[in-house]
Length: 409
Image 1 (cartoon, one colour):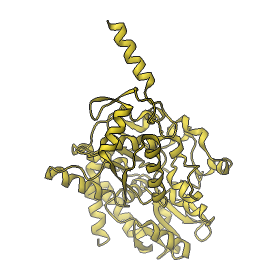
Image 2 (cartoon, rainbow, N blue to C red):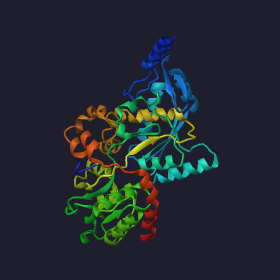
Image 3 (cartoon, rainbow, N blue to C red):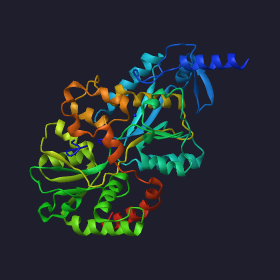
């Protein structure tokens, strides 16, 4: 999520007709490049499934000029302003268009779904064109018939670079592979932290933060704690037992329940707390910002909650939405080495390999240490557990509400 890796890990005729179609496909955009799907080749034709149209590059430019703006719902990255700047430059360079680009950031993505459902119920257009948030929110929105089909699309050739395990064709595709809620802690002041249950240690009294109820930051924490306690996250009764254990045992050590990343950074840096419950990328961000004692507790069971890109039904700017999705999947954006940002913000934006085509893009300044902070592609494929998001969504509100009640929120 991000501000969203790792100390242990700390470590994307019939013959004639056929010939014409093949030529058109060959002339269309190919993966990678500065985002793929560039503005050249005016006669090239691509199929845009969400519009159910075949468009030439000149027609694509016309659609972009007609749409003129884009709204993306995401998180509070440190480099959000630069991301906006880079995408606007890309659209200008590739398509000759100046666009308005609104990039909304929140650490509580459920608010986006609330707004989306309200618009849907009122018969209004969707308030967002792209949602770039955790996978569980896509699953929920899909159950509520709020997600548009758009893949495969000639406007998203970079989809081919991403492993199948990170795709939900035709509705969504991951832009992260290794994001998960975790415990970020000071290994110098609290070297004894080796498991989530260690957060109950009396030495941590008043020196821990836990997530506020309701969103996936809290959900991910309780998924991992349930695994440690031998409980089934699909069973709300068992999850209430996990909540009870946390409130009774870790609760006395909690200074504050928060999902505000900047607040947690301040508390860690000032020495006011020893451990915070947030996303794995916070450990990288703090390390690169000059806090080498910051470490990541690697849970025994890692349940990733990766960010997925999807387009809501009723999106007002579907062509620019796909241009953005394709750009976000490009190796040059997954590994924003040329951007004028520091290593910390870089480490927030880059969240693991989406496929083998991304492996050659590690910057020179990080090649020696990359494997210390990020898993290998093989580890991503084999060691990260898959969450049954339908089952999670079916039960989580019950035990999250219970969590809120137990902590008086």
